[in-house]
Each structure stands twice: as structure tokens, then as C-alpha cells.
Length: 210
Image 1 (tube, helix red, strand yellow):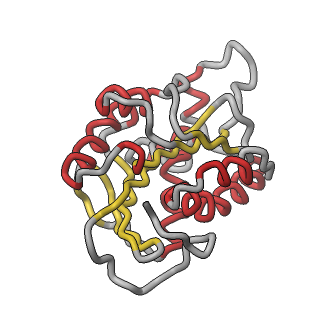
Image 2 (tube, rainbow, N blue to C red; image 1 turned 90 degrees about the vertical axis):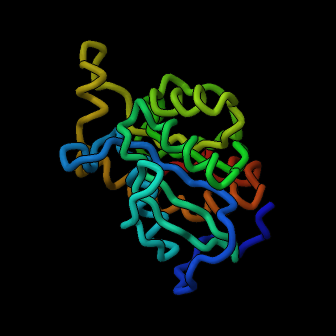
Image 3 (cartoon, rainbow, N blue to C red; image 1 turned 120 degrees about the vertical axis):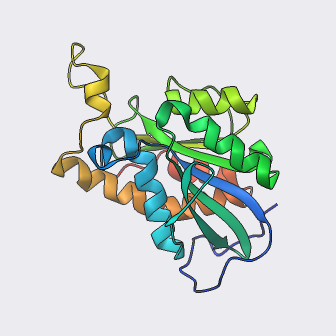
């Protein structure tokens, strides 16, 4: 169990030490053509968390771009899988097996078209919600007890709009006005979840509107 923190991730120059006790995984697709697209909301989340806690995401391991973060004196691995979305579980399973991380300490952050931009939803377990990356993770892990944060990317503008084109489109300037504040809340939300205070995180942020 993670010790109680100060309620947020603080930048630190302390080098990560000790064993890795948890994974924080953001889902997306690698490559410049996918940068800042709706489907890469999980990558945007990891970038914001890494900046908040002073983590370097330049290493490549477990088929992912990774960074070590010290959170409350505990070492956590931040991950952006480079396997492409539908095969995200390969990277997560490889890292969790290597460090012997239980599913309950693997936090996954991904996009959700059922939520408007500027909203998030935290859950301790459950289905994949139709998100292919999460679907692959749950399939390879063999359990659904991974906590997760869904980030709203908005519904298709009309029923005939191709779903693939929508999730691979970029946020408008107006949408960024709502997305930015949500990303800013993530360090605190992640801290609460990793502390084992997920009910508090859900109460605080599931109703939050940016």
C-alpha cells in the first residue's frame, strides 16, 4: 500500500530507488501522425504526470516509452506503450510480469467517447467500455481489477461520422480549453488512487467539469 502523500505529485530531483511498486499506463498510438489526437489522450495524460513529478520519459523498455517516478518515496513506472493501441496489453503484461506488479497496482488511463471533453471517470475495475487498448490489456492480464481513468474526448459530431476518423482527429482550440484543466487534475487524482484512496478520487473528480 502506498503511504499517504501530500495530495499531489511534486517535482523532485530524487533519483528513483527501490523496487517498482506500481505502473501508470497511458494508452495511445506512437508516431507524429497521432500526436495530440483524441485517441492519444492517455499519452497526453502521462506527459502531464511526468512533467509534474519530474520524470524523464526518454527510455525505451517493455515495448514502451517509460519513465521512473518517485511518488511519496515509492517508485512507480510511467508507461506509453509503443505497440499501437490494440496491442497495449503486450507491453503492460511484460512490465507487470517483470516487476511482479499485481493488477490492483496497474492504473490505466485512456480515452472515452462517451464522456464530453473536460470530464473524467475513475473506476476501480470493470469492463473495457469498448476501448480496444483496454480490451487487450484485460484479455492478456486475465482479470478486470485494474483501476482506470477514462478521459472524455467527446462523441462523434453526427451518427454517420466514421468512428476511426473521429478518434484520430485532433482537439479544437475550444476543446483544449476544457482538456487542459482536466489534465492538470491528473497528478492529484493519480496520487489518491495509488495511495489506495480511490473512493476519495472518484468522489472528487468523477463529477468534476472543466
